[in-house]
Amino acid sequence: MTDISSQDTVLVVDDQPANLKVLLKVLLKADFHILIANSGERALQLVSRKLPDIILLDVMMPGINGFETCRRLKADPATTAIPVIFMTALNSLDDELHGFEAGGVDYITKPFHQQKVLARLRAHLTIRRQQLIILEKKVQLERALLEIKQLSGILPICCRCKKVRDDNGYWKQVEQYISEHSDAEFTHGFCPDCYEEEIDRIAAYKKNLAEQKNDTECQHLP
Image 1 (cartoon, helix red, strand yellow):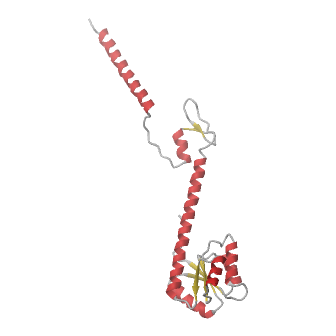
Image 2 (image 1 turned 180 degrees about the horizontal axis):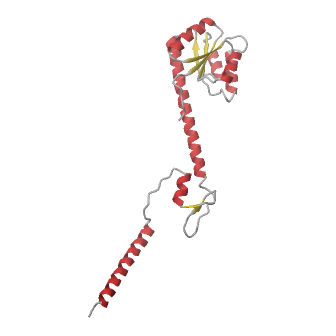
Image 3 (image 1 turned 90 degrees about the horizontal axis):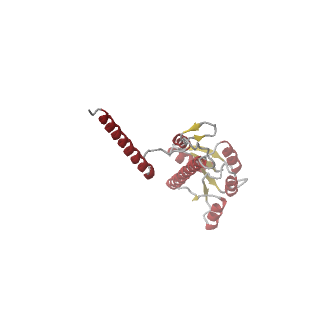
């Protein structure tokens, strides 16, 4: 199962020391591991070395702004799945839509409300965890389907003893071969046709014993 750390890593991108101070205090108290960048360029450099679990990204910064930084993150397969929450004093509907179009998952306006920041972080981290679990289940399912496909195609089988030849040239019982190539478990019994044959075989065996007994008794008659 996916190993999800108990201490999530948050990358905070903001060029204002006062904003960083407030956010660091809140995040450290909530036991987050924190990475800091004071520009979009610096943020891109950081994520190339260590992937955070989530990013708090200021919009108005010198150099490339937050929207452009987010677009570059989403264009990179290595970082495209990291949730990005924008932080800005811009609060118009157009600004929010611009943020979502750039690939952000949420939008927090300044000044910060500490509990709101934490609530948004935790909500999107939970969503991200669920996405990772679903992704892992998908990988497991694809692996299982691949194993099932190994049982398809032409399978050499002995017409007399019904043993199967594996890829290495060894002959094995059908049950052993299927067990090695799938999670199937076997329980043995009789199909209707074999059941009737077995009943007939037992009846013939008993009849033969009875006839032998009668022959033996006749031989001992005076």
